[in-house]
Length: 321
Ligand code: ZN
Image (cartoon, helix red, strand yellow):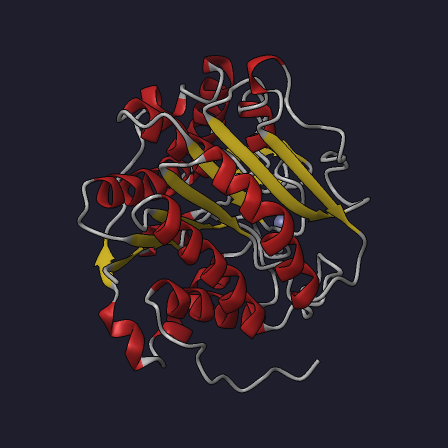
């Protein structure tokens, strides 16, 4: 497989303060761990670009974009109690969204089969008119709109972050061209994503929520992916698959209560790789979302990258839990 990794040291410059779980050191931990795995040298390293305001405005309201920009211009601030910004955060959020755009462009041009976007800030809680939950701009939603702008008609988004991707759901709730499927802990932040939220209007039936009680394990996720999500994806016939890959379903994560192992992330990603091979000429873009235990985060990403490359799971020293 031709697999790409899109990341940048500029992502470290989104400063959230000393006590916030969504820290620059998350990305440092990932990059350090990647260096320990020779097999990952096969990844094509690609720089992100900045999303333009026009691209962001395909998802977000102009007044909200202006708010994020002026908050940065004033030296920083907070979009809500969880979502701080520094002076650089506006440009870094554009670069985070632009990482996903670059990945979509590379995959649709056929230069890559699939790609992983190791970016921050994350995106899936960012609503069209409101930043929240550590998220400024909705990277995966902006990427899906970009794919439509480039001529695709059907994009499938799978979100396995422990938190419901409320922003992504809202962006496409009335849009039948983008299928949004989320597995998430419930009840849990942000307290959306009930099973009876399944889209409306033209988007009726292209939102699929699978709320899960705490304590679910890798096998529980795989069962749902195989029995529920795969048939939905096949029926939808996507031309591109995007994944909001939250690592906060790992058993070590401090902000979630799921029980996945590091190897579980290889299994989950392998499902997405298989669907992409079957349904859309391998076209798959995996975007980092949450994940707040540094070791679990780094190990999970390593396993996802092995799966994208078509390699077996990496041998990792299993963290003590
Ligand atoms: Zn999360």
